[in-house]
Amino acid sequence: MSAVVTTQLAERRSSLLVTVLAFAAPVIFVLVPLAIFLVYSFFSVDQGTIVYAPTLGNYVRFFTDPIFLPVFWNTIVLCVSVAVICILLAYPAAYFLTTLRGRWRYALLMLLLVPLLMSYVIKIYAIRSILGLNGFLNKALVAIGILQQPSTLFVFNMNAILLTLSLLLIPFAILPIFLSLERIPQTLLRASDDLGASGLQTFLRITLPLSLPGVASAASFVFVLAIGDFLTPQMVGGTSGFTFGRILYSQFGTAYNWPFGAALSVALAIVVICAILIGERFGRSRGTSV
Amino acid sequence: MGLKKAFLKLATIGLGIGLMTSAALAANLRVLAWDGYADPDWVKDFTAATGIGVDVVFIGSDDEIWAKIKGSEGQDFDVFAVNTAQLQRYIKADLVSPIDITKLPNQKEVLSRFRDLSQVSGDTKDGKVYGIPFCFDSIGLIYDTDKVKPAPTSMSVLWDPAYKGKVLAYDNGEHNFSFTALTLGYKDPFNLNAEQMAAVKAKLVELKRNVLSFYTTADEAQQIYQNNDVALIWANYGQQQVKALQKIGAHVAYVNPSEGALAWLDNWVISKGVRDNAAAEKWIDFMLTKKVSGELSERTGFGNTVVESSSAGSNDKLVWLNNVEDPLKRSDMWNEIKATP
Image 1: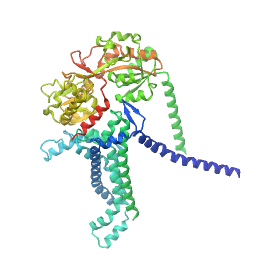
Image 2: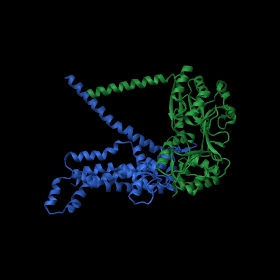
Image 3: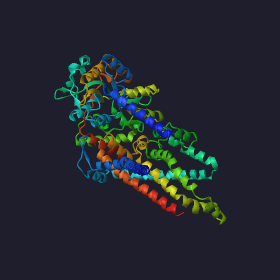
Image 4: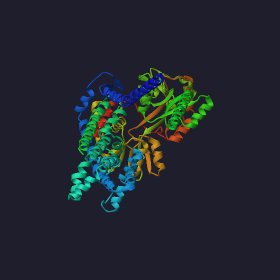
């Protein structure tokens, strides 16, 4: 009898321990660092050392200094464009995948996701050589006669960032769109066909609306990843492609102004959280109505 | 279950190795240096000669040294390398110990211009020596000999519209303000007044319009050079960068501008938390031997303080980097310049 009680107790205790651990991990590794960040954004810096007296100065500066808001806004526009490009390219690819049968479908999907296995930096380096003046893109365009001579249009400017980020992030758009397309019951499509709808009608009135949750989460994925990136703009942005990520990065490296960097990160985090919430909300409300 | 056991075993082994190495570290001299300053063969020779084991940690930027030394209040390292411009900041923060140069017999044998340390800007404070210079280089101009004719003599060539979109500059506000100030003819490029700052800023916005991109690492500059039409590179990495470019077959040459080339001078310093002062002194003295200094120049292309080398000869006008009036201000203004459309 007592043996049973002790094992029960031990079980309860271990389950309690598991619960505590399950909660402790996100608290310690996610919430606490975020809180520290938030607190730091209210400090200031004097002569290279951090002054631990609360101030709103960093936020005032963010809103009043003429350089931050325009760069912030341009970066948001850039990242929305990246998301749109990614979806326009990823949707047909994902749709094509769902029309395939059996193992081909997944083999091809894996192939499209293979670039994610490679190092991010190596991919940027590779894309930069492709876009360069002596790069593949320019050589190809000159060879087929579209350009008279190599153009600097593709590298070290905003176009370059747009192209590079879109290329790097397409896999993140394909996957959610593919999953939402795959979940659409074939019976619905057949029913639509039976009722005399054309292929286009079926696509516009059944497939597209039902896949929108996937599109929404793809868009928020791509947007969030793009806006947090500083390396791509740093490496292909040149002199005109200046983004918020680059300003943020400079606050931690050369400027040694962590509090201001933290305040800029908070501004970025708010945009990111909004993007995730919008993606989530849009995705869910459509999803549950099926 | 088997997996869990295996995992536990692995973790235990890992922990064991971790403990063993930290035990080994306890007795060794802890050196923090840039790549090229503490090559394995020198460390081996040093240990053979003195019986002192050495653990070297390499760093990649000035900010990283500051973070490591300041982060542990100097307790994590015995000796480290830092340039004269940075050193004053460490002295002010009480992170370094004064050095007794009578314990460094080789310091008497160095090149005459480095012998009297009170004459080397930034190495002393209140009559005490805090840094022993051992290595230097200029931040000059690399030009493509096929594309840039005649050979440039001044940094002002970077603004030449003939090379629009063919210039590679370095992504660092502090240095860019300093060299532009020299180009504009200002006496003290490290202490600019508000009016000079504004003039330099306007000049840098102009520079930006001539520049293809701002690079950060030497490798990056090299890759951009290979894939694009680059004629001029502002060479933050000096001779090291020239050597690397020539190795890949680039037709490039290096020049120290006539208005004065910024130059850095790296020093060995002893941290506040040094465990064995005598061992640290022996390390510094060892680095000042003719053999090690000579090899350092051979391998990196940098100048050294012991034997004359080809880098930044005595004919070149060198302007040793110094503390700037307000690093934060320069960095903010550099962001403004980059944000200017």
